[in-house]
Image (tube, rainbow, N blue to C red; front, side):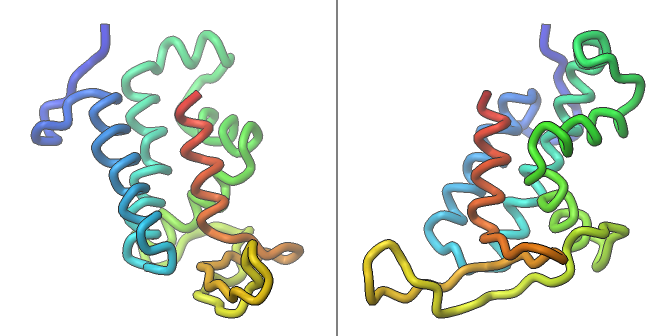
Length: 149
């Protein structure tokens, strides 16, 4: 049976959290993909969904994945879906001003990327690591799709 929380108003279950915070913030972000506010909000909700999963399904996750503590679950997610590592750095770095993350070297709003149709220029929120440039919306989409499985 799914556990319920007492401290999140009408969001009581993992499913409530996913539908009302993760998916709704993602729908808001998709309407304006260059909004730092919407990106950060969605990053925080999407990353911290793992906290709700761990709290609700800790013993199942420990048994099935051979995990001992929540940090092991985090490392499992980073290995399963590398986009989670970047999303975690965005979520925690934004929430705490800076984080101990080591992968992201810079984030910014960049203009002038060629869109799917020739001649159309697009803007993106980008994440730069030592070796790659990522579009934030792609990172976010990969993480949300992982949670949907």
